[in-house]
Amino acid sequence: VIVKHRPAISIASIRAKVESYADILQFEQELLKSLPDQSIGSLRGVLWHHCADSGFLEGEPFVGLRHKLASQSFLT
Image (cartoon, rainbow, N blue to C red; front, side, top):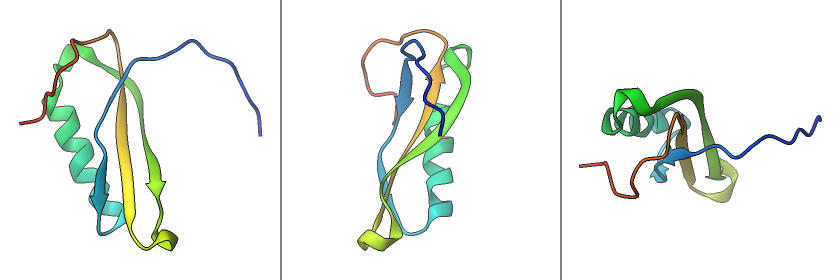
């Protein structure tokens, strides 16, 4: 394991309970569609809050932002 210190990165994310790991892709796509194209950076990932062993899956797909956006809900 290598630990690196990096500057803070602004992200947008959505947290969701899902039935399977693959189901998180739907929420990632919803997140990406809800953001202005010019604000989306290259960093992407999923933070898993609960895994299958816990009895349910809960994940949070995220995307790095090129610049901060006003704090509001973009999802419709």
